[in-house]
Image 1 (cartoon, rainbow, N blue to C red):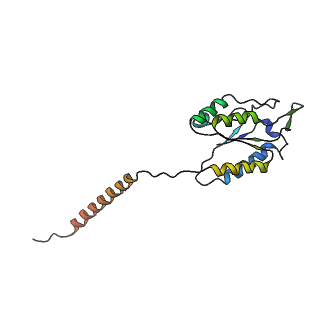
Image 2 (image 1 turned 90 degrees about the vertical axis):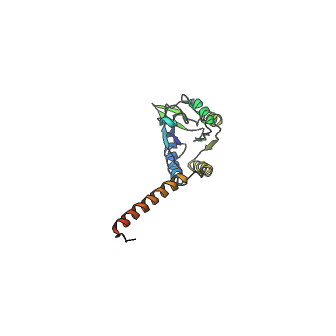
Image 3 (image 1 turned 90 degrees about the horizontal axis):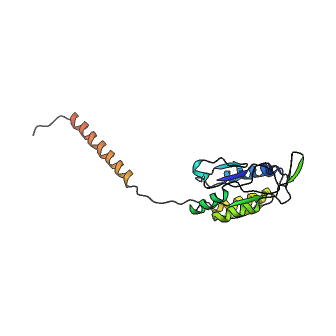
Amino acid sequence: MLIIDVSPSMESTDVSPTRLEAAKEAGKQFADELTPGINLASIAFGGSARLPAAGADRIALGRQGKPAHQSRCPKGAFTAARRAKEQRVPISTTSFGTPCGYVDFDDQHLPVPVADDTLKTVADLSGGKIYHAADINQLKDVHATLQSQFGYETTRGDASGGWFRSGVIAVTMAALAGLAINRRLPSRPP
């Protein structure tokens, strides 16, 4: 899953044009360059994630939806990270932006530094890694690193069931053809 924070803090212009626009561009490139056959779900997160039931206990990252000085972890993120570790699903996180980011909200100039501590805790609890990116090029480098870690495994299974069914069909067709041919031929006297 690729989760992108879409909270108001992502409107900070410490990354050009904004954190959010840069993250969306890098996320699109990431998805486009994935190895064929790798499935990717992308989730927009802005205070609370709306995840399918199967993924709800795996990932929940980011900040609360309000720009504020303090970065708070969404409810359940640490629990989700522990569950992910139990299921051997590491969560790697990327702090994106600079410590100097800010947004203007309700006539206030509010600092929105990246949530390094929260993201590091989630990564540590799940067995994942924390990455840092201060601009779009660094974010694309992080995505390239993550792509190199993806893969798939081909496992051999028992294919005899399919061959058995094919054999039964072939024998049945041969028997029916034989019956049809036998009916058309005149019988010979002994």
